[in-house]
Image (cartoon, rainbow over all chains, first blue to last red; front, side):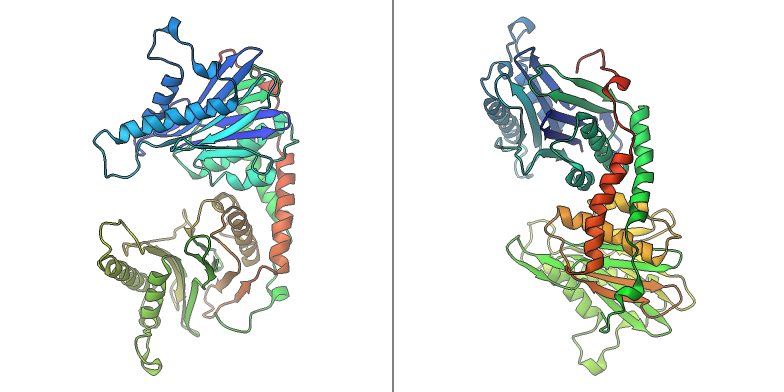
Length: 254
Length: 254
């Protein structure tokens, strides 16, 4: 499994992904799921992946034209005129890779080798944009009403995002929110694991404002993880108390 | 979908279930998923169900021997000597019903008509016990390390249970904790819906200490729902702030 979140703020984009890949519980490895391309001063594009690793690696390799010798590579992701065209191109590649695998003699076993992706970025003189790409190659774009996307193991970390997100929040608060969301997911699901990759993209600044890998030893992440348990407990105790008397016993039995 | 939680405390058992049943999103209804049997002064047993409604209703009907005329019914759930035997009996019935349906000409479509259940209760001179029954008919029992079970749409509401649960907590706090867990689930998943059924079983008291149906209009549930949003926001802001500077930019690019 995987957990990735991409978020649109008024100030720009914030993205976080885990790095755990597993094939069963006895075969886990660390693979980067966040990829970054940029033309300094003109554009930057970030892609996050969830799903079958061979599929997502094939898509990334083709986007980077790794089938060509290094000096011939001119990834079209760096030349497409709009983010919409980049999302279209990623979607088409993803669908083609998945279909190619499924034709390969494994029919009748239902959908396999699937993957989904989040594409985010900005091109000069246009708005920052955020897309979620489905295995079928189609995609949706984040909007005012749905300003963040999650892929992978999305459920454990969703309630806090729904409640904590605010488009006006600072980048620092957004990073804190993502760390809490990831911490809740890590606590519940073994298939999501540290380290995490973080990238902050400021509007109209065509290189990352901030990027880092958050290791298990990271003091800030550790402090969030332990303070969040305590803060949740306090939040819980601050709620009004339930009273059996106040609410009475129901006259009719169950 | 469904959401049910059963919890063992030092003081007894607390159980909560939703009531939404849906077949697609355009066909939703309210069905009770919590069932209660008792022999006053001697035993009480509660069963909660998730999964295919025809399956769970068939199991409940057979447990209650509804195939017999009312004056001939002597549900064996009221006569089995131990909670373990009750769990065994429920598991066997559940497996038989599911297998019966799957043999009925719907083969080759994979597992359908499945369901899972939580069985909780106490028989005089024995401990309160809590079991989770799988569609295959086998079951597990709650223990010190895993003192609560969830069935149905379990993920959204799990992080707060993991963090808030304490075996020594009062019944009132346990109800509050369950309400927060249900509120998080309701906010994220349309297939879980109000009203909720609540039952509190005190150790060695062989009738419910407290039972009620929590409607959408319930003032306490509404106050939990709104205060929890605010309490979470405050908890979030009480966490240490992230700082780009403190953590530095990583020298190597992504």
